[in-house]
Image (cartoon, rainbow, N blue to C red; front, top):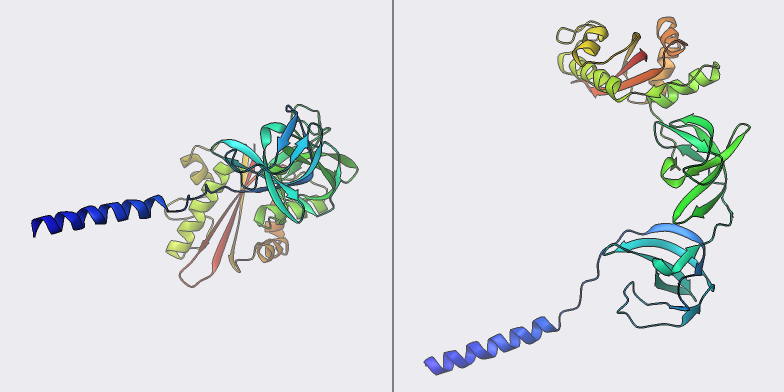
Length: 299
């Protein structure tokens, strides 16, 4: 009986080992970023395309030095850049070290918006180039084209009479509609400078919105945090002047700003030329109403 059990165990182990050795290799996950431009072979006499992004994959046909390809996406595998290229009716892969992306302008007219709180449009597609125009978050831009500097995509944009370049990371294809962008639309229409986003003012506005939602108060003087000036001082925010607007009702920032613009006192804050920064807070009270808070600062 003991010998039979031993033989069974050995057979089981061998069978299990054989089964494990036949398991498929799991491919590395990666995130593709759109490129969609022409690339050229560089730094090598000929470049072999691969059916998968691995130098261990079988070789497909070679592309000679300076030969071109249509690069569709880029991504990293184990820290190495790869490009997915058009290959007949399908795709193939080439290592990024041997590909130079075209610097030609590619027509591109999709509406875009400034993504960060503020950014400079550049005179050329280089971070070291001169500044053309300072823009705030949410500013709508007319896009003309895109091109590459190295592996960085730049968009050529027009804002009024100004034309220049923005890096792709500074561009959004979705309008960032919020209280700040809606407020700045009103200021822009009135010929005023746009307000900059302020993280410290955002924090104060959120603290005040949270207290109002939690306690049911709707006031510029709160039991816990006092006046906006009290809250600003409590959080160590420096300023030369401040103002506050509050609204309770819809969660839609467009409706909130519209309501403020239809109230003389609130409109005066929004169109005060002395203010330079804005913080916004939002919270929902027990009845489901949204409380919006604006904290204006003169820095």
